[in-house]
Length: 134
Image (cartoon, rainbow, N blue to C red; front, side):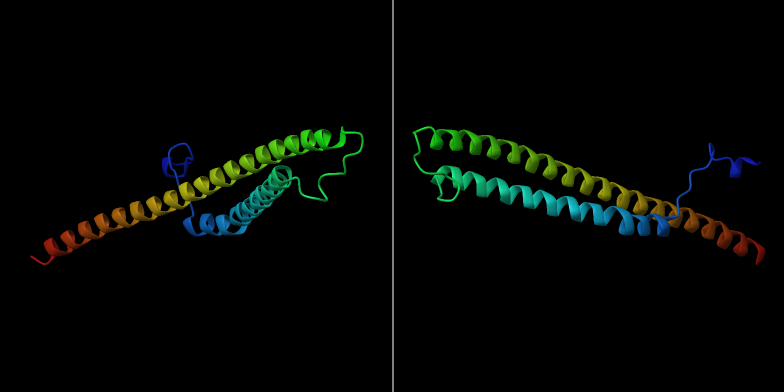
């Protein structure tokens, strides 16, 4: 195997296949994670509003005086935990989006590098042709 085929010596990517892979595999995951993050954020906001306003349906009656404090404690925990989930999902969505952008930038750089190298070879070809015409 020559050096041009030795994978430790050559770095190649198929930019069309990489772009297709992003579209087929990464983009749906990014969209799903963003959707889930939005769902968690909405759930957090609803639970927080219910707690802050002691919304009927979320809060029980007075009972023996222990129901409202227990519900309040429970909703505080729900608000906290769902807020953590929302934050985690938002961070994951942002991280996946950053990864996607890095892949696209990598594709763009590979294409630019190939075009630059091709231009150099074409310039050499033109120069050699010009010398042959003398």
